[in-house]
Image (tube, rainbow, N blue to C red):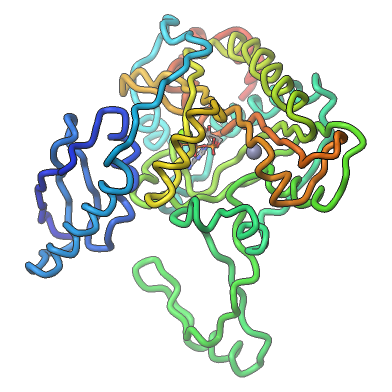
Length: 397
Ligand code: ATP
Ligand code: ZN
Ligand code: MG
């Protein structure tokens, strides 16, 4: 790896409220860029390069940056952040990065980029948060589902995922059903720099992808139906999102676990249940002693769709995030979200609500690994400082 850097002035300047989102998109700029850091006032950026660039390559890079800035920054309006709950001032006993201790003590083991083995402590915390979510879903009498890790490209196409989040997609292939090709693969397949190298023609077309979300599968299962009454469902599932150089710790995984309670029906049914979900979740956060804030947010849409979609979500208050304090960073991390999709999925998937109109949908979604991470970032490893409920649940681990 080289230690070449390139510093650039940004025009337009990235406003404060967009720095994180622009910064995260810079990871997808160009394969010659290892890491990009937007400076705190948004007026410049440092690129850490894989190799030195000639003038032409540098010009191409600058043009790409300009494209990102034009799409995401020019004319962007500052969203009005609405705060629904604020418990950030809770007194906490810990302020270090738990990742350091976890890696040193074998509490987690890094298997690859964004891939970690979770040892007994983190696994038990994930289990605990999972059980708490099961109880929350139970209080709604939500019916349990299990969804595949695979998802069809047709479903993702139907819900506009290719346009909204192309950067995070993951593809599944198998070998072609052809004896010659399978033997060719067996003979030539090997790994180079951590990647599989095998003749391209031995591999199938892409008829499956890795699922980036949980609730899409329910909408698929309900597609083409007319509901007699509102649906309350629940499921836990693996989700896959390629987040490039942003995949640096347990905070951002390639493969993570999401627990969802999902509502499908008429508008008021969905909005009332989402709100009730938020209120009931408050009691869990109390038990966990979590320092957090619930505030309006938007999804991490890719560059071209970002400005329009983010403004739309913000205007209609479609998404709220539960942002847990990370004291060691003096920052917060989204550990859950409360989402309302209006009748988007109802229209796309042809689900009809009892009132005869396209169904509205919403979900309450928890990121289980992030909850475990945020808990350790706030309470550390000294059990006697932990909230009683968590201590009791992990007794004997
Ligand atoms: P972020 O803004 O941090 O990228 P998101 O808005 O994409 O998160 P959602 O789509 O709302 O997240 O997903 C629900 C929850 O799943 C998040 O609140 C978070 O806890 C978790 N989550 C999302 N992406 C990841 C990831 N890459 N690794 C670990 N957990 C994740
Ligand atoms: Zn969902
Ligand atoms: Mg988010």
